[in-house]
Structure formats: C-alpha cells, structure tokens
Image 1 (cartoon, rainbow, N blue to C red):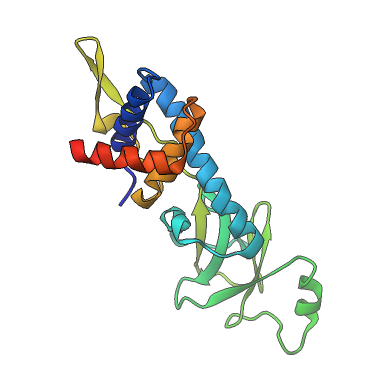
Image 2 (image 1 turned 30 degrees about the horizontal axis):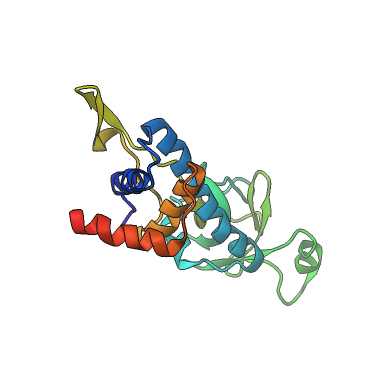
Length: 210
C-alpha cells in the first residue's frame, strides 16, 4: 500500500508540536517530503546500479512498457524510464540478451551465438534499445524503473487553515513500510534531529490518537 501523504503530514505536525518546533507549512512540508523520497530512492538506486538487483522497496517503481515497434531494430525508451531492466519479445516473452557495445562486434561475427529472431541481442544506446538482428520487426516490451513522482500534500482553506484535499494530493511512491525512514528524513530536513528510537515512540503515541 502506498505511503499516504496525509498520514505523514499529520505525523510530522505531531512530532513538530512535541518538539516545540511549531506549525510546518504545507509548502515547507512538500519540499521536505520530496527531498526525503529522493534520498530514500537514491540509496536503493545505488544498490541497483552496482548489482542490478531490484530491492523490494523499489518494486513500486517497476513498470512494464506497452508494446514497442522497432525501427531498423531500434526501440525507443518509455518517456518515464529512469533505468532499463530487461527487454522481451512481446509475442512469447523471449528475453532479449543485453550485451555491451564492446561485445557486439564479436557476437555479430560468431557462428555459434550470432543474433537471430529466436535468440535476439540488445544494446542500450542513448536514443533507445537497439535490437539485433536489425531485421526484427516484431514488437517488444521493456521492464524498467521509473523516477519517483514528487509527493504533495494538497489542501483547501477553511477558516484560514489548510484542510487536506485528497484530490489534489500525491502519495509517496514507496510502500508504507518505509514510513519511519521517510518521516525521519523529513524531520531532519525541517530541523528536527531526533533518533529513530524517539521517532518510534512518537509513532506509538501518534497511532494511539488515531
């Protein structure tokens, strides 16, 4: 379940009040929330780039593209792609073996593992995923990681006070299992530096009031 931005907002206000920090404005919160999500994403992104492993926390950002038609073997990346994971033939989910540009010449000359319609290869390029052999015209699909969308606590105003408006709000991309990590990062960004144990204690008190 996606981490609800209003729950995080209310908890931040709760802790801010307990710490005598005062009211945190929606604008201040939204900036801190975006930074907190970027920090959490970047930690996991680093692991992916180093190991190509998809941590469970990143799975909400995994997507499968719609069918993509190659043009001379070149398949355009989805507009919201941040990191390529794998490509498949759309018809039978045959995996397109990813190779580097440096490996390409030897593979193209190979009499054993040369690219074919039943054993395709692909190279990541700046302008798309290049499929070999380039004669392939069948659609492909890509799995990829998308960039996180900035969370936003949207609101209307009643009696001079902001009131949560779900219709104009955007939840965090992460699941709510990252609640304490996200709120700790937000609190740090707005100048409330408390340890994780105290955050957990505040969490218990906060939940008791819900």
